Image 1 (cartoon, one colour):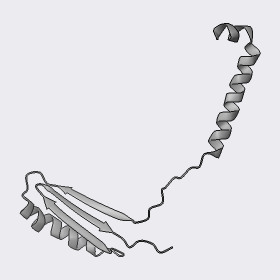
Image 2 (image 1 turned 90 degrees about the horizontal axis):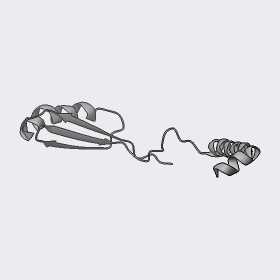
Image 3 (image 1 turned 180 degrees about the vertical axis):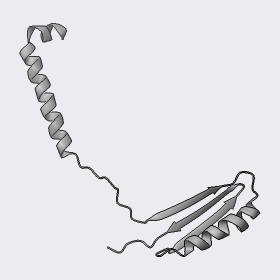
Image 4 (image 1 turned 120 degrees about the vertical axis):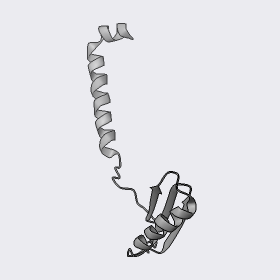
Amino acid sequence: MIRFAIRNPHAVVVAALVAVVLGVTSFQRLPADLLPIFTTPAVQIVTFYPGMPPEVMERDITSRLERWTAQSVGISHQEAKSMLGTCIIFHREPSPRW
């Protein structure tokens, strides 16, 4: 291969130009999606408070976050879970009607 490249420098230049042209053409034809299409918008809030028992997380953190975030417009579903030192709240908006 090296001997062929040394003996035929014009062929190497032509092959490189063909590779560049094919690369540029392929790059221009690639579809680009900046933002994916979401069918069901959702938000998840995760709060950490290390060492806090689940009952205290539920009473002090989870219930307050649920009340504050439930006032948002368009929330159709809300789930919450309190664990040892962790609180997870999941909100889902109604799916769009196309």
